[in-house]
Structure formats: structure tokens, C-alpha cells
Length: 628
Image (cartoon, rainbow, N blue to C red):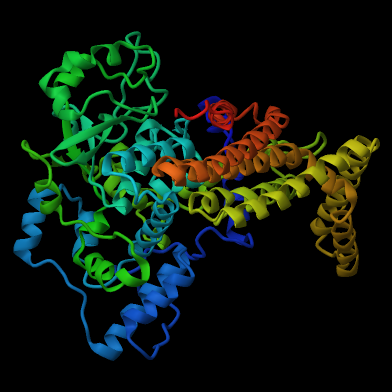
């Protein structure tokens, strides 16, 4: 879920709400990562718990584990167990770059101190687990698209369309005490959230292309290689960002098709009418494209004349150990983990593209470079998850990222309750739990849809619809709801005041204190509490579950349409009715969402994106008869 990310509405919340939400997600039943502790881990995966030695081929054991579970915790366990088994059973060591190899790589790819430590590690690092989990996520997404029957250019087009369906445009402006601008988050964080900037769409596309084994690149000016992810581009009056947030140094993302590069505009959600070679040979051929009002990237025809390709890959993909894992587990996982930087660069035509991987200089307060694609994941994650964020819990970027996905209704409390007191915190935790555990904690419904787990996602979302609809009905049918909430507020505030008086008495009777605590516990079980939680969560929860169910049906229809468009003759005739029926089902789901969309009024871009998808469903549900 998301909500209004304008700086004046969200970034000024008191820090207590940061800590509250961090605490909620830490103790939730489906903890996002399953990690604990906040101290910096060793370079390698050396868990405090002892890794059991498993009999059998260590690689086969790891593959079997990862076929069953692919989240961060499972990857951490699998890599930790693999390292232990290799050491105790086979004495096999992981490959590392020699000094000459590392020097050559450093000449090719700019590497920060943290990058160098990551690439040269002699065992699996703490961040390897997060990187492996991310790649498995995108592998599932790529597999679910089933693009094998299409040529490379069409695979790229369909993959890009998928990215634009999953990530609607809504830059996340982050100002509260951190960076003066926007954070470009790593692909899986953007996908789970469901919205992002144009640059974040590029990041997701690059990650998906990696699993499709297509070579991606970024397109900007000649100086883009040294510019940070948070590079601003402002309007002529210097009052606003052109793209709603710092754009970054790139205005297009490309895919190598043979000796040329096919270009895509992530803000427009479309492919360019010309390739990179055509654009450089004759920029005026795209003059109308750049002059069109639909071009909101800020790129001009002059930019087109200086178009330059740059390469960007995850830093972990440059480590030889990732290449070994990819090779050894190919039959089990079929996941693309490693890049040969020199080979990737050589695949492109002259002039060879340089690598983009800027980093902050030591002791430099500006963090905009931290969000470059190569190390965006480490910038997001705290130390105990293999990241580089050293902030305390509650104000870490990862905690803020999760908190910002909750609607404003979670942070509103009934009149008569002290905003920063225990009662308010517990009520917020209840509302945040209802929504956070339903839509934010992985595997959340979006993740299931994106990984092609459509049946599981649909079943889960129908259950969520019923749950939140029941909450709405409790409010609608209970004519005394307002009175019951007011009565409960008066009761519980009185009990907490009484508890405070008892605890201030140095000679207090423990039995009296226990009696008051018992009354407080009973008060929290009264119907008034559920009514307050329903007020905060039922409408928006119902809207969210309905929207995601429509998205699930839409993606199923897209798969049917892709099968139809890949077929010919009698096979196409057979598949056409199935595709039309799938689109009618999706259209019906979108129309159901329209009835609940008002609850998303404070969620900029969400309902608008739904209308675009619904329009496509309406078009394909009633197609023109095929030409004879």
C-alpha cells in the first residue's frame, strides 16, 4: 500500500511513529526478513547460531533448500549451510579475484570501499543472501511471463510493459532528516511497494532483463557516469522537479538487440520510435517524440544528440563466488547471478559503454550517490541484513520505507486520547498490524502476483476482502459505534490515569496495581477497540484487496493474451475465446474496484493507474473480429 508522499503530509510525523511501526513489523507474525540485532556482521555469513553439517553433496543440499524457500531468511540459511558444508566436507574454497583481476575490474567499474569489500570477500557475505533472494524473486517474475516464444525485441517490450503495470509512477520524496531529495530503492522493494519514480522503473527493468538474459543499459548524457542517482532536474522557474522528484542522470533505458539498442521511456511507459543507433545518426527523426507534451522526462532533442549508453549491474554480481553459485545450482534454480563486466561491455558496439556506479566520498554528507543501481540494496538495508545503513532502528531507511506504505488513517486516533501516550501507540499498532500484515509483510499479495503465484494470491485476497468487508459492516450496522468508542476512550483513559497514580505511590499495594492492570487488560478486549481499528483499516483494506485482486485477474489475462499473440492458425483460433473470457473477468474485477476506489483518494496515482489498466481490459474484452 501507499499513501500521499508529499513532504508536508508524511515526513513531519513524530519519530515515535517511526519507532512504533518498526516495533510492529519486528514482532509481526510474518517478519519481513526474519533478522534480529543491529550490530555489523562479519564480512562472511557467520551466524551466531551454529550451522548444522548436512550429509551429501553440499551443492545439492543447498539447491534442495532453495527450491523450497527463496526468501531472505531461507537464502541466508542455505548460503550459511553451504559455506559450513564446503569447509567441513570438501575443503572447497570459493573463488576470489586475483590482484591483477581485481585491478582490471576496478579500472572498468567504479567501486567504493564497501563495494571492494563485497567483491573480494573470501566467503559468502551478509548481503549475498539479500542479493540471491532478489534474483530469485525476479527469476520467478521472468518465468511467469513465459516469453520464450517471442524474439528478443518483443521479449524486451513485454517485459517493459510488465514493469509499467507493476510500478505506477509516484516518486517517493524523502526529506525527514535524511537526504534532500528522493531515494531510488532496489527493484524488489519497489515491486513490493507497487509505485516508484522513472529511475526506479529503470532499476526494476534492469533486474528483470538480467533474469531474461538480455543486456540492459541506461541512456543519458556523456557526463552521466559520474552523476548520482539523486541528480535533480528542475523547471525553468527553479520551483519544482521536472519529474516530480530528482530524475537522476538518465532519460531512457535500453536493451541490446544484436548490435543496436532498443530504447524505452519509463515515464511514458513506451518504446522510443527509434533505436539508439538511429537516434545518434539522425536525431531529428525523433523530433516530434521529444516535442510531444507526453514527454515528461525533461529530455530534449539536444539531449538526444548527445545520447550515451552506460552499464549498471549489482556489485554482488561481479564477485566470482556468485558465478560459481549460478553454475553449480543451474539445474536446481535456473537463476542468473553473475556478470563478467568485460564480456558485457564487449557485447555492445563501439564506443563501448562505461559502467555507472557512483559512490559517496568519505565523510560526505550527501547520500544521493548511495542509491546507484549497483549498491541501492545495501543503501536500503540495515547492517544486520547486509546493508550499510547505520542509523538506529525506527529511523533507518528500511523502517521508514515500510512505515510510509501505511495510510494516514492508521495514525489518526479518537479525540480524548493523548497522541504520544501508551493508548495511542497500542491503537496505532492494531490498525497498522491489520494493514501491514495483510499488504506489506512478504510474501505480500503483490509479490505473489508478480511471482506468478496467481491462485495463492487470489485465494488470499478473497479472504482479505471478506475480513475488511466484515469490519466495514460492523461499523455500518452498529448505530451506537460512535457512542461505544467514546465510552471506551473514557474508560481506558481513566484506567491509565488510575494506574499512573498507583505507580507514583512509593508505598503502593501491589495487589491494587495488579487489579488495575487486570482492568486495563479487560478494557482492551472490549468491542470499542475493534471499532477503532475498523475505522482506521476497513475501508482502505477493502479497497486495497479489491485492487490487487483486479491486478491478479489482469495479469492472468495478459498471460492468455500473450499465448494468443504467439500462436497462429488453428491454435490462435482455439486460444482467442480463452483470452477474451480472461479479459472480461479482469474487466469485471476492475469495475468492482471502482466502487471502492474512493478509499484510495489520498493515494496519488493509484486509482489513475487502475483506470489505465481497466481501459486496456475493456478494449481486449471486446476485440474487433480477426481479419480473414
